[in-house]
Length: 185
Image (cartoon, rainbow, N blue to C red):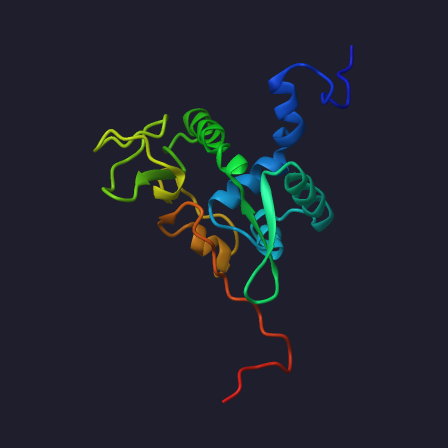
């Protein structure tokens, strides 16, 4: 028996959740939003995702209230996680931990620390130094023992993600200056 194409009318929380976040690109977009990616072009560069697919997934995540679409200071558009989106952190962290356990023999790809005291976080988000459950904005992301750089060298988005930084801290990758619009001296 084939599964129905939509679970929107089903009385199952897991099925309804999968309707929103149960697709590979969607989870990777949300992961990168936690890592600080906010601009359409930066998602494309980091994920190597087809533009049409990204457009569709971002539109869906905005409609579901997981992301909010906002104008940025430079006149561009940014996508930021909402409280509903931030509530997905334990799910993403659990999936990353599972992947590190079964598919990363050299150890965790990324380490998560309590930014205030530097303590490593356990799989439930508790600081091993102070014992507190650390809220997302106080979590520092850094390369772990199994880290292998991804993406081309010199890619500003990858460089920012691969540098120790707090989750949700926006990546401020420089935008190229259009031809003929250089800085004035």
